[in-house]
Amino acid sequence: AFFAKAPLKLVDIGDQSLAVRHLPGEGIPLFFIHGTLENHHSWSEVVAYLSAALPNPMVVYDMRGHSCSKLQEHEQGTIAQDAEDAIKLLQALGYEQATFIGHSYGANIAAQIANTYPQFAASIILYEPPAFGLLQEKTEYHAGLAQAGQLFTRSLSLLADGEIEAGIKVFIENVAFGQGSWTQQLDLRQQQTMLENYETYMDQALDTTRLQGRFRDLNQYSGSITFLTGTQSLPHFQASIKELALILENENILFIDGAGHGGIFTHSAMVAEKIIEVL
Image 1 (cartoon, helix red, strand yellow):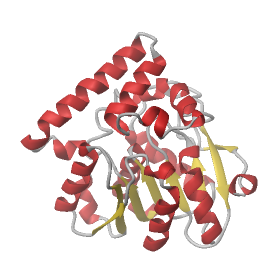
Image 2 (cartoon, helix red, strand yellow):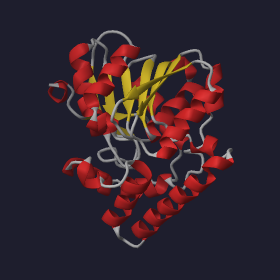
Image 3 (cartoon, rainbow, N blue to C red):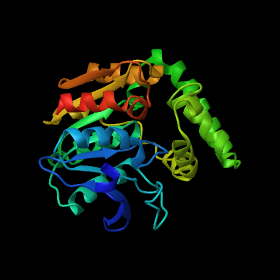
């Protein structure tokens, strides 16, 4: 029903057109940002639940360089650019504020928006932002980060050699969602989307700021901050939430029982219920 009411359209934001599904409504819009390798479909089940329960406008889109938001000109992308794109899209759709809801790298983008464009962010809801810059500051995380870094490098090396599926699978099963997740958690649509977006994934890897995050600056943000996290996520995501709780003064943490990093599509109803609880 959501897809029927919100057909995919290209929206011009200036130097780029983004593929968007926009469902009009009443109140502050909910603006969803997907993670690395994905597109707007990663939020589709959650938005389906929410659109049936809430009157708010809903926006899902493919980020620059992902799926239908094909690059019009190629240059090195950055998280700052992705945050600016979101604000330009929000304005192009006629809104002055939104609740920004991000998953993984998309959660880092939502945090960037709250820090850089706080007047546009009524609140933020972040599903497991990879706040790995915080982990680098503490020695107890160095071994785990080093192992994840080696596997990430292995993933990029395979992709550079043309081994697309092998490279993406190394990342998904060792850095993102866990062993067996390529076939046990991801359907064919999700697998194919990730394979098709491998070039943008490689480009994002060159942006050294994408996982650092100005998370301490969120203490200056006046809107509400909610973290969603699965109880079965990989250790580096659980550690990120732990460290974020230590440095922030106004956060709320909600747990998705039995979910991992991919909880927005494996436990979509539970995620939607938590978002409704927050709102």
